[in-house]
Amino acid sequence: MNRLPEWLKKDLFGKTKKEREEREKIKKLLRNFDLHTVCEEARCPNISECFSNHTLTFMILGNICTRNCKFCNVKKGKPKEVDLNEPEKIAKMAEILNLKYVVVTSPTRDDLPDFGANQFKKVIEKIKEINLFIEVLTPDFNGDEKAINLVLDAKPDVFNHNIETVPRLYEFIRPKANYIRSLKLIEKAKNKVEIVKSGIILGLGERKEEIIQSMKDLKNAGCDILTLGQYLQPSKRNIEVQRYILKEEFEELKKIGEEIIKFRIVISGPFVRSSYKAYETYQKLKNGR
Image 1 (tube, rainbow, N blue to C red):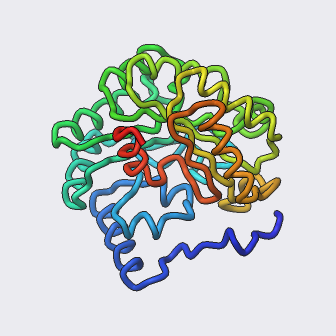
Image 2 (image 1 turned 180 degrees about the horizontal axis):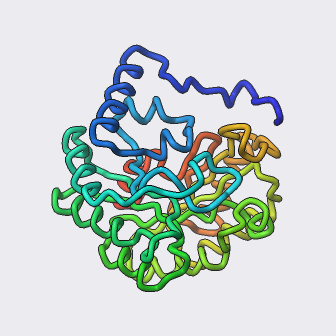
Image 3 (image 1 turned 90 degrees about the vertical axis):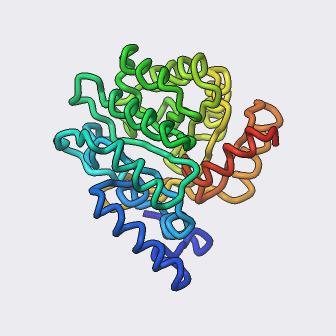
């Protein structure tokens, strides 16, 4: 793997005593409720910053994925049974943390008849019962119309589905996913949900012209918010970083996305992840900024 540049090194354990204490508080709550977060499972570099600010992305349907994307640190294999009490647990933890905005994702569950859609629906409904905003970051549900509509008809405030990379790299990086299927999901979502979001991770071997074309594809499908971030190899099991993207390149892509392609918002930077500062982004968009 290419040596990590100094400007991409980040303290995962917290810079201050307060950050470390808040991180441990969140982790203890998660263990007590038997809940997972993508923050931990994917080894997100922003974990201490986010946990110390009481922001996190819940991972429902367990922490084992049925697919084998080469960039992802989430465990692969045979998942456990679905926890039917999960929606209630998430709602209770959200209240304890005084959250205003709840972000929920899941591993892909191709083993389930509904691909996990009913669990997403129940979580959305439970969070709306306690009058909080909710953003969901979903898998593609294998393109199943019934499953997709279950989630969309529950009306999350923001619907997010990441295309992750450019179509040329799908066969190697995401062999069980499908670029066109993901675009169609985003298009379906825009017909039912006000705000639709997607993300691309950079540094996997994509070319600039491919990134821009994928940005155009997302915009044409109805995507409102785009996130662009640097891929950082989470473990030796994962694909190596092919290139570290310069700050100036992220800034250029943001400008292209907002001023030329006309996304409503582009969040672009090395540590940007699909749920990073999700509530602030939602507020900006709702306030017309």
